[in-house]
Image (cartoon, rainbow over all chains, first blue to last red):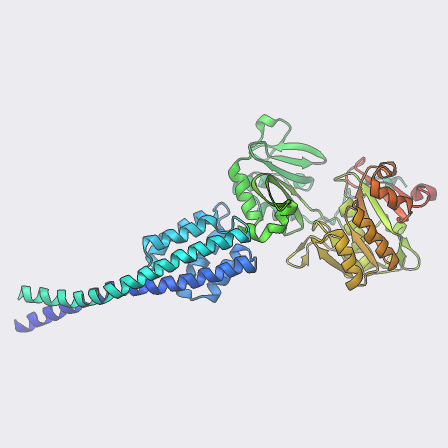
Length: 174
Length: 339
């Protein structure tokens, strides 16, 4: 009987710890995603504002040059645009954001910022595009700060919480 | 001789068949579905496709302005025609500009975009000004898609009037009303003169083309979409005056070819070219010599007898009917003289 108790307790503690770490990790992942996303958008800005590269090509270049763990969204966007004649850029973005929250660890507000970029991408001249890029990058930087703060506060909290919850359940049960 | 006078473009077997397909790629899905239904033989005779917001889908077919039904049939009745909506225009513009308005700033200022295949798409809408210059066009209301048809061989019959022995050419001016094939003829002359014509013992010459509207060579990403010959250098989207001077300085051409003369500066450039011993081929809008003599700058050129050959086109017997070829000094027809 003791053996069974021991195994159950260990399982409970481990799984709670794992959940805690998983939740804590999300904060870290969002922070990293946001940094990489900013890199991508900076590169997209260069492609558009300085090289005047047409959008599908620019998106492909961003995919190739940036960290693939985030930049895949730009490749997907490009494919959506090229394959569907009746989709405009904003529609492609909104289509894309549905998968975005599943594949990346972004918050609602981060995605909203990306969408705001989708609304203006490619529809105006370079000067105007640059202004939009500036705004989006600034907003993303704020998000990054927010993510960093949350990470510092919550990461440890969730890790500890996981272990402690596991222990608490075990104590209460037995 | 009668043969000479009839359309040189008729029964042309060299024309590419896929121009229409190229255009379809740039059209909104609804529109391209309608245009796809047009039979092959009809397609070849369509010169323009015109989209205007809230108005019937129109085509220019054999010089006539007709409308298209939703099933792709051609009609003269406006009430049967497919009405172009805002979404059609927006999507088409998006495809033409490849989702990237910023990449076509300069083109928008000029009011047209050239797409792959050398087809020119004219744009109208609301014009915005900045510093007294057209800054951009927004709220696009009409698109005019001109299907560029390269017709190789159209100049074969008249080239002997342009060539001057030994191995040079006469300064030539092509005079024609709009849509009578003046650019097509110019392009084919360039191709022939650049490649050389063994049949006439003519060895090819170096040709510099100033292609202000990207119509002659239709450069797309550096590649001429139309055959302009082996010895041809193209200066794309460059203003005529600057372009001609640049070519004179840098490319040592034997011939400079350019489209649609008419400005004061063009004449300065022509004088410079002549000083350098370079021959000129060009085109101009007009119906006849008398018509040209009423224009301020052209009158001057004609009086100086710079152009030694003047080719007059019309669409009397189909697009590209050669009305007359004249000697630039005496204004006497050379074709008729030889008959």
